[in-house]
Length: 503
Image (cartoon, rainbow, N blue to C red; front, side, top):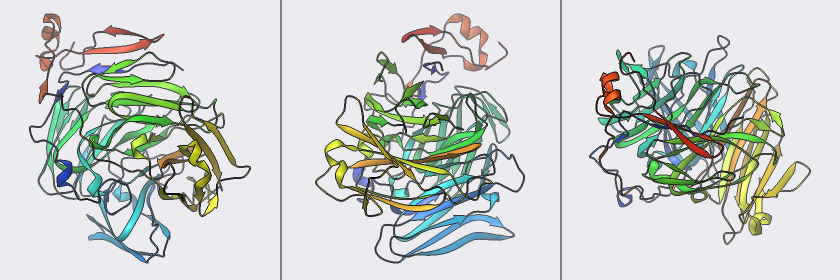
């Protein structure tokens, strides 16, 4: 598998809103983790393979010792009535709720398909896109941990790259600097174009590159004047030796990105694909096995890495893993973020899916836990020490962390992972599973600190074009394009002209 740097400088490299993100002091004090009382989520498009088998689900769990009431609602109407559903969770309880397929956002559209979730105590929320042969899931982020800047990440090889933006307040202005082409509300856009629109609370805009389009929207920069929820992935994507699978992840806002990320795998010889995106100028990446790499806003690196290791950067970054193998078995892809060390916490709760597409017995489920080696013994799953034949662990090279892979029972289950010693190290956990023709992955939970990023970025950054490119790309007058690939760890440059006019 080629290790390559996908590094594109756009028509417009970055055009920032004049309205800055709210300072940390203006955000509620309870901000900063993915357990919360208020969520707004949505479900991106999932390729229809078998009619009437597509069914989104919401997994909700709570670590509260009290009864927890939950209300789910939407302005989207089914059979003439807005959707609403009430749940009662027992102490440390959970529930899976299936959502009508009509809530799946489709193609490039504006809709009211967002779902608002309000709880009396803190809960964890995971979304799950389920279909007979194409599934994936995501960790929900509470409203008070959302942000105003995001960078889209999708997968390659590509089929229908896509993303969604959902408003949390009325009259929210949104602009997206595109890295690939799309059509939206009757207008065609190309790489480098800026899409501007407005959303109200619970209004969603879903944008995709188009059916079977090779356009890659990775690196597209979303900027808003009020907090929004953002999702990205692929209508469907595959990799060598696999079938097509839908991919989705709720994006962590730029203000909560980190500089150190520990990637993991079930075995040291498991190889997965990674994409790393930047938002800050002159972001230098240090990746095991590679020379240092410099990225600019919206640039990304893609490559394959085996086992576990540490990725570090001079500025905050977002790291995504495209699952490719589990226990040396090639699996259909899924997309999940690699938590930053700054995202580690002391407790997480999650569910594993009851069904695996058409298989009522569910997935083969696993969880990867990363914790400092001297704090491993005080971790528990459902109150019990993490031991047994289904537990495999190994040190993360060149760090003081240990990676623990736990094989969970097949099928649906409820799990709480806790660090019982408050003086010990925090941890992170990523849940994943596979079955024939499908897989899923999502972070069990995160702590999302509010960070100050990119103070050096000006409001507008452009690159002057060459005379030749100015003549050939009338739509893109004023800007340059270039792409950069990595071959044998040495960057090579070539001009790349995006179709702004017939070239």
